[in-house]
Length: 123
Image 1 (cartoon, rainbow, N blue to C red):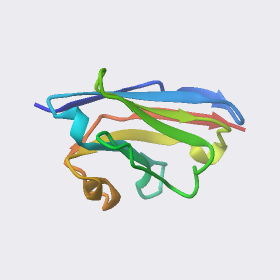
Image 2: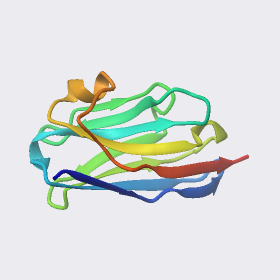
Image 3: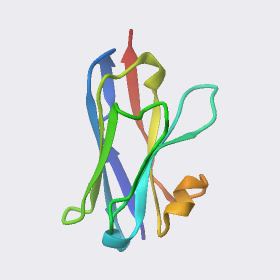
């Protein structure tokens, strides 16, 4: 059974930083695509950042480019999202997601989802 367990969300002031973690199990972590989506109240879910664990190809949404950094630790089966210079518009539930191909994430239809972690950025 595939499990994705997110942690690291919370409340932070604008301009601050948070690091999200997602620990994966039940999947071949060193050859997959994993990353983050987010959904704010009243808005559609959007892809934030993805990474392929075999060759570290990355994807970032334009809205977070230059502020967020995704990385993976294959020894720990964990992906991280370092979020800097946070803005109130980054407030959302952040979901970890996983697929055996990057296309699954880019298309918005990954095979597996975590439960989500709330990120709130106050102005």
